[in-house]
Image 1 (cartoon, one colour):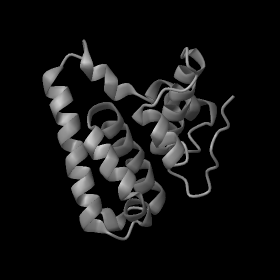
Image 2 (image 1 turned 90 degrees about the vertical axis):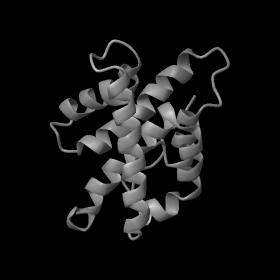
Image 3 (image 1 turned 90 degrees about the horizontal axis):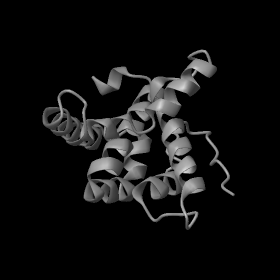
Image 4 (image 1 turned 180 degrees about the vertical axis):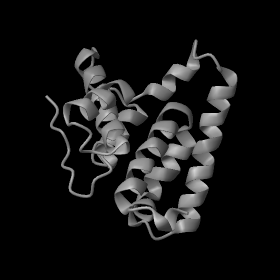
Length: 146
């Protein structure tokens, strides 16, 4: 099925994978950091299928644990509040995945601006730095921080 999708949509899906690993799986995030070239090349479909299966498992566990979204399931919204605002502002000219990636960067940036030490060593920070601020577009440039 992945072979039928345009690269832009696969990259948008990678934003969701980054999100799931940031919020729930430090080891999975470290693995993704190591293998980001394989993921972004969009040629290793076995790796991408394994990555997707891993992230579906993460999401299923969170949803099963909180089916009514009264607690930890809210973590799945990381990037979505800003992302939906970006989608609306841009009249849906960017994909949902692209907007979620930008939304994760915006949420982490907002956290940085309110953080006492200005930069926290968290996976969200590393995803921004390592993956171009989690932006799924090949031509995306990092957002500058203060």
